[in-house]
Amino acid sequence: MKKLLYSAMLCLLASAAPVSGSAQLVFGPGSEAPGSALDAIVAVVNDDVITRRELNEGMTSIERQLRQRKVPIPPRPALERQVLERMILAQLQARAAERGGITVDDATLNAAIETLARNNKMTLTQMRQTVEKDGIPYAKFRDDVRRELLGARLRQKLVDSQLQVSEQDVESLQAQLASQGGFGLGAEENAGGNGGGARQFHIAHILIALPEGPSPQQIEAARRRAGEVLAQLRKGADFQQLAVSESGGQQALEGGDLGWRGVEQLPTVFAPVVPKLRPGQFSEPIRSPSGFHIVKLIEVRGGGEAPARSRPASLPQPSATITETRARHILLQASAQLSDDEARRKLEQLSERIRGGEDFAALAQANSDDATSGARGGDLGWVAPGMMVPQFEQAMNALQPNQISAPFKTPFGWHIVQVLERRQARPSPQMERARAREALLRRRSDEEWELLLRRLRNEAYVEIRLDPVAAASGEPAGETP
Image (cartoon, rainbow, N blue to C red; front, side, top):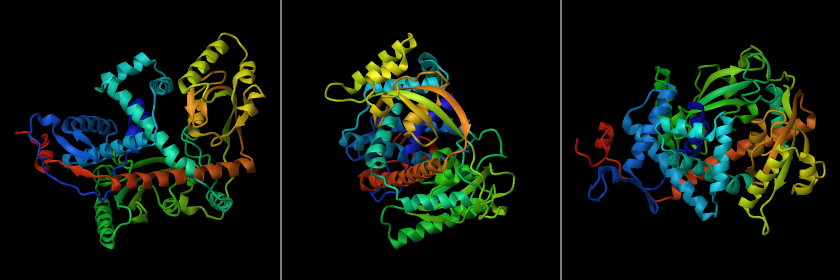
């Protein structure tokens, strides 16, 4: 269940970063009569509200997840503020999606949940039972997955579709990668040990956040706070607990953990710093548009046994092998003649016909809206990591040879994909360049998304009505102990 929760429901929470805002914050109970303490309003977010009941449910879920991850739970007031900030930003994302005409229909939601169950090697019934056994109502689970999909579509529309990368930027990254051992392998490809492949870094960070367009006084205050946090770490304070209580980053409630990153996947401001750290070491505060970061290098793997600092930066390492997949697909795009739901249902029917013995290639030639691959029976040739959009790559990577996926959606439309075979290969120069471009796009997408979330938070009217005394005691606001 732990894997299920972190791969699905926490993805929504991780995309809803607590971000420092410029809106006025009002502390103390609101003016409403208490009535039911659990129905008391703890935050007003533009025209929406968050109730004490909702916050308590969020707190229970987060505390359970922190215990599963063995992260020390910080004092309740600090954790409550972090959880509330995430809920505020999740609300803001949902409203931004509505304004942009972004929706997730039940068919899309059901397909996403089916894919999630399949990736966790469960049936839908098993997944529902596991979710409810963990204390989460299944209706709430569906709502959380729907919000996650809304956030992904909002990011695609407002950020990913606007990004551009110059040839000079690609060449600069390629030069950097050549000097630092090439591309890092994905977590699955490099899970077997520490000796082979390009160097990867397991990192975590604490962000002391700044609002957009901060004043000199705000910058200085954030700088001082970052220094105080660093001093606590050097005296032995637990990094994960401090991240949960202090960080303004998207991964705060995961202890600041950013996971394993190859050189090309490091945030731009971290790239010059992280390779010089040793495992267990902290960086000095690093300034970015978001604020001041303290980065911890947890582990290093790949690139041989030598510490990162001991290898000459000018010594290129041979490119690591990659897993290439030969696949074919059928694409259907919604149109005036074919609705989104009809496209999905038609692909389900085509999948059943293929499983019944009909030829995939013939059906692709007759039905696929991808004219290039359709003429070849849907054949995409050999596909390397980073060549396809993330939704397609995720669905393809979950399949074994000869398996056919359930219908899934990407920005191009609805697909079914079949994996034919896989092989290990060294990337060609053209592939290295394409991967460098994709790495830059992903890095910039992360950075621009973070800025957009901060902007949403800064421009919103937010009134926080937490009772500091009640929060400290663990009692709901307005409730008499």
